[in-house]
Image 1 (cartoon, rainbow, N blue to C red):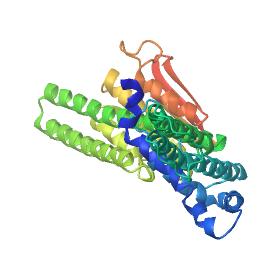
Image 2 (cartoon, rainbow, N blue to C red):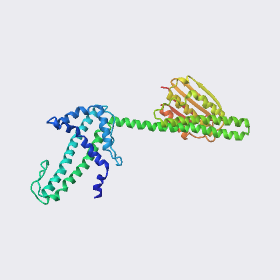
Image 3 (tube, one colour):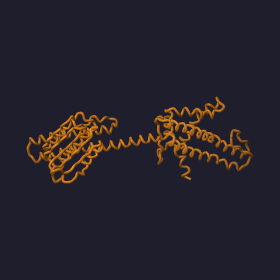
Image 4 (cartoon, one colour):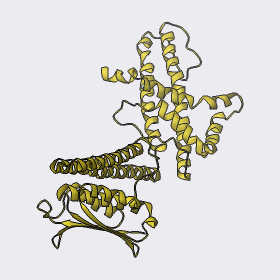
Length: 386
């Protein structure tokens, strides 16, 4: 019994009932103007449903009055204007179905309580109301026992019609296949953006922490006040750059439409090289070709790849000679970082940083290799410029 009465304790049952009543308000205005007012109402709905904005209006009503937010399954209802003729056609079908079902529910809402009243009247020996469409003949006391039945039927009509119109809204006002594909692509882009931001934080913050650790250790081992001052200056500069990167990434998270033009590019590579030199590494850099002509996405990803490669050197090899080559030629951007092989760098690279380098390269249609090569540890990346 409690399960049968539960729908009547929820507000959405009555808002769905109201939604169906609203559908017949304007057709009822034609009652005193046109004899065939009901047929005319269906005819007028067809051109109205073809208006793109009608889908927005109906979608907002359906979301407000039909959707039960506490339900396990919530129908997906679109509030965007109709973009295709298929969307317009579904909107027309929705308007026609809503008017037909709303008219039926409105009629039953009036007639069923009137039938109950007629049953009670005749049970007491009175005359039935002529307005009822279910005739009640005779005068029998047991009519009083039948009086609750129309009200029970009305309760079932209210609940079932609300469920039916909500399911229709999900089918006729829901997203089209093109809209579902667009939504899927948007979610995919969001996931890719989150992965990119994770790599950004890993590369930037990881580089800064690595430089700070190496500098602090070198300063403590050197015991030279002048060297310590230089180390602290390098830590300060690297930390400040990392904070700027962190603020920029967090800004992208807060403002999804924020442009990425403020991200560092290969034209800022000198900052990375100086940071590595300040950490004690002997960096021999060779940058050839027009770096300023490299497209934004390739240049930004190239900067991060170079940053991660230098971070790996400082983290696993320490202050060792490093050869850096960045070349722009033949529609290809080539980046190579080599350093003497150490005990910590004896096998193929499987760390998260090297995996991030490979992912960045693959995303741009390039390729990345890392591992021992002729007594050195090598990271070699080639990115297409087009």
